[in-house]
Image (cartoon, rainbow, N blue to C red; front, side, top):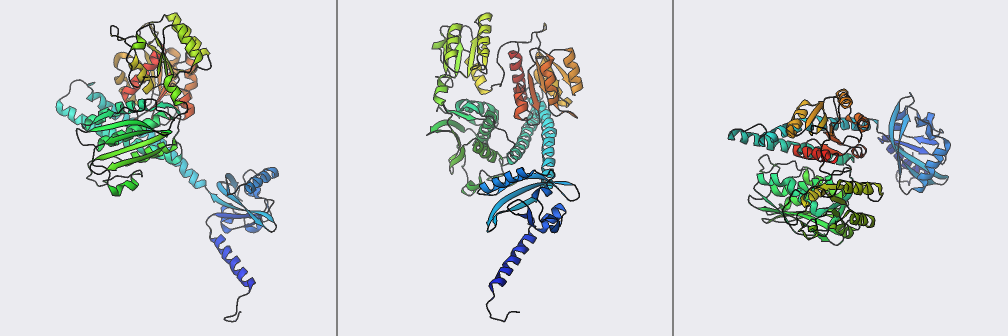
Length: 606
């Protein structure tokens, strides 16, 4: 025993340090493995012993592969250790381990090199993530169930109430209409809540998919105003589209950006005094475009500004607050714009209102795209002198004959080609064949237009062009065709296991179409073997089956293949979306949008 006051020896200090580090390793809740330069184990902590069921004596001197369910070859270990040595930070991997009793576990490991006097050694931090992964799978299953089991009945409820409000059930007493409107408004509020919660989960898990395409921001603003005009009417608020950068083109996901637009406009409406105006405009700021949504409300309280984009953030979170909402909308806006390489922000003056904005990088070649957006072939000589809406100014070129159109297609790139139905059938077919055979223009949407405004000076089908710009149906040409059956009434196969949804959709279409219902794949296959269809509406999550299993059969059932619309409460991945003509999510779209989409595809196949 050392005498009191005598300096401790260097060996004693080293022993104390070693004991301290040993205690730290023993107390660690993660497994720790020390390896020599060849990847052999030369030390483990108790957590590894407990995790894998081996004692330290059993493991020392063994290659690290002893802990793997599939033992790696020596060259695999060498390659991995070489990779670890080349990295400035830890190298992370997941692997399936095997315990001493033969059972397996999923592990996450971080390996770091250590330069010692005897060479480069390694330390591996191992964590058992088996339970975490199981919980994630349970959560994913729960979210999928919520998507289907909540979105489906909510679609029925909101759709039924909407049809009643629109007069589908006949004339109702004023008191009944008032009560139905209240129920309809609150069902839509519940739908927004469910959608916001599911979106937050997708953002958290990294499962929110972004498909980037060129988007004209002025078109986005117009579509956003159209989508929220009914909501604005409820609050007695006007919406104003300010003049701005007409050529503002960005690369973004249209659905996600539309979600941002709707959230910002709805939020501005909600906090606007009655009779006021919400203004939406687009401007260019250096190499970016900014979309601003402004209202003239009370502004944002100073104490709330620092957390306004946080989840569940509400300036008035009390149970007596006047404005509803989940407090998730602005958080979702920020997450979406951030993933699109943009920024969000706001300006607010107390008592004078607030302006929220987002900025996105300008798309490469935006100037050229502006000038060559749409090509119209029409024999109407007056067309070039027609007055075009601001959204189309500078974006339309005209061809008076099929030969002129062919020359322009050969020399330039267009986002859409419009063929006037005044052209002969032969000319139209020849043009379509040429476009579809040219690799440079094979994917260009073709819009067939009839002149529904005969007698009007300088008439052009510009409204339909704008509708295409607002709501393109990917992979489909638009036309004014119709079912080729003798009856002339389009036939739709609706595969859906919820009979309420079947009934609501049938009521929404009315007598314009013939709908054949199938509640499972067996009934769907029987219908396909006996009849031909103009469109198939397909739910993905049937009672015990997946609607995706029917897709290959739908492509083989008729020639040409029947157009397919997925209408489901579950989100659709890119692979499935690319295999169909349109994807609509229950509770996210109105019944009117379902009807419009299906009618558009029926016209395409005519």
